[in-house]
Length: 132
View 1 (cartoon, one colour):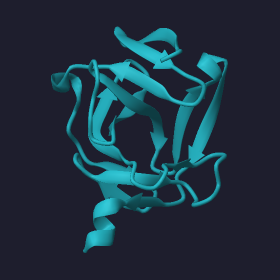
View 2 (spheres, rainbow, N blue to C red):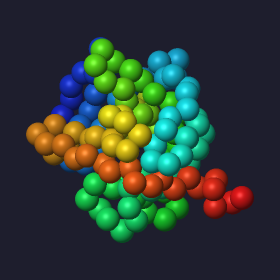
View 3 (spheres, helix red, strand yellow):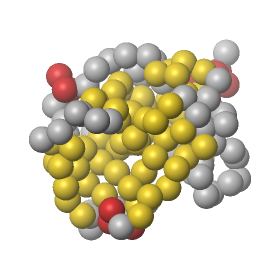
View 4 (cartoon, helix red, strand yellow):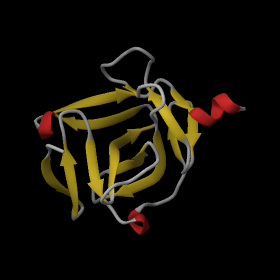
């Protein structure tokens, strides 16, 4: 993985072209509910859309069959990260993260930390919702 490496509250923080990752131990993650868009997600929820469907800019939309599994949050001195496992798995303790600004807005440092993208959380699609 090509990435710029930084630090978030003493933890290794990685910025790729369009994603952020942090190296955490499971015990570092606060398993708590999180309000995004019009829903409250809980650890274990599998998500494949945050934002608006078919709107690449300012949305997170995964390809069919892929998902982010919400694990909880990690809070540093100034910011909170929403922490996810890609397709439910974690390699080398690396979790995908988004800065949690509020229930309607997330943020990603992009372009190896040279710029950023705000995610407009207008809606969220939880895969379990479709099975009910």
